[in-house]
Image (cartoon, rainbow, N blue to C red):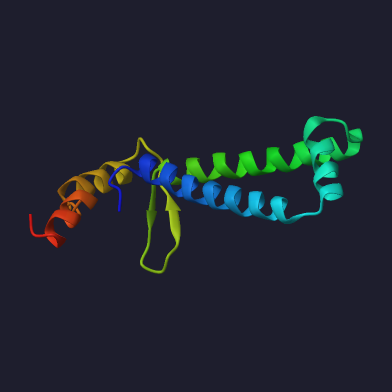
Length: 121
């Protein structure tokens, strides 16, 4: 869909986080007031230190997942026909050959080109 892997990665994360935010906000709105008050205590720091530590731990794990995902997306690698990812060191002959083939490969159409074709412009 997007030609730039970083833009595509950011778009996928926006969809993912946006969906989670909508889901969590709707679940929160449906909770009884005493449960909402308990959640507010955790979020404002009025809860016990153990609860806060667990919440921070969850955020750290989620953020590390995003870092790992981003690094995997932009890292040099080849995906084989049987869906196996093979890492390639950037300054090697193999990386140079792969880059040369990628430059010579036909470019897929951009999303704007596909939309223009669909609507006949």
